[in-house]
Image (cartoon, rainbow, N blue to C red; front, side):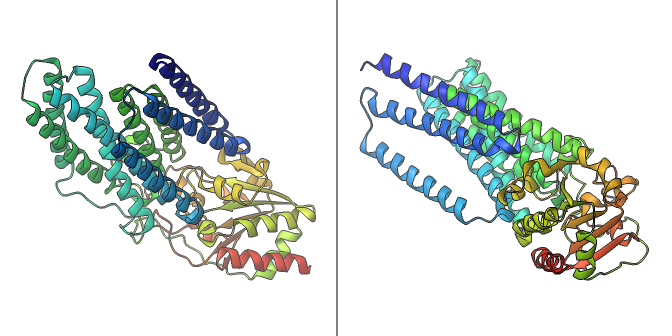
Length: 480
């Protein structure tokens, strides 16, 4: 087979893989088709990787033993780690894993750009377009790498979830930006032939940009509080895709350009939607200052009133004889791995004629769509999952709102100015006829303030681990 025919076959395989990415992304618009969309996208990536490997093997000159060793070892390590994490990482740790994947993707894109730049600089074949795409790929990839590691550390508890001030504040950021801009200008002028700093200096400047970008990633994410981590994760995911697209331009690989552009665009759209769900601008989030993080003392008003504790039998009676129940899941449900118990409780109530729905807040949990994924794992019927705008009008007609581990997204304090959650759209749980909150303690959420819902006269607090509490409720309903 001629090299021309081989490249044609590979090119069409790349296009087929890219089409699979587009169709898979479209299917992820709905929870009902998201799993198939994920499989289709994975199949497209397998096709693209296989076609690339075929091209490398069959091209004139083939591959050296060293190249084979690198590819085999890379497949073994990457595939092995991916398989291990998929089977062992718990759903509660999935946000941290997503952040680590973002870091790996950003670093990979940056390394591809650096390697290609070194070849061009050494051969003195650097052009303006290569210089621009290299700098963008390196800068965005390095910011994503270091920023994602910090985000993962905050989510894992290895780094404090509260905002961490950066020495020098905005001045540090400005200095870093000016340094990166100066380096970029020098490399672009080198590519245009306006200056000739020499291969060694050009490569040195690129590594300065690498260092500056890595530090910038730290200074960008450290001041952001834990409550904003869902938005930060989606933003860094967008950065990963953009860096991959830049790397695709550098090595002239169409499937990498398309895949990166899709990830970058979808991540950017998701970031905007998440920011809108919190009623804040992306710039305001990146500037920091929303989530107080764990242990932060807030100036928000005390909830007032007394907290009423109830026992499982009382809750079981309310649920069993209710006409409608709305379940409000939060991060506490994920920590307790209670999603299967919740489904069992819902099925038991439905067998008694109770209408059960789930209220999904877009930033509940620690990553975009966390509650959707968690409940889908337990095979909760998709039609029962209702987004905030759809479910809020139904709370007034609801007999019992069952809040399981959700905190800030149900806090009525958001309707008043002057506190960390002011203006954030919330689930209107306090409009329900009766409210039950399953929670281990009176601890704060990420915003670091008391939840006024707990002192509402209609609210009963069931102080239990989520799974243990729900299992007690199942037993209580069955006994009636």
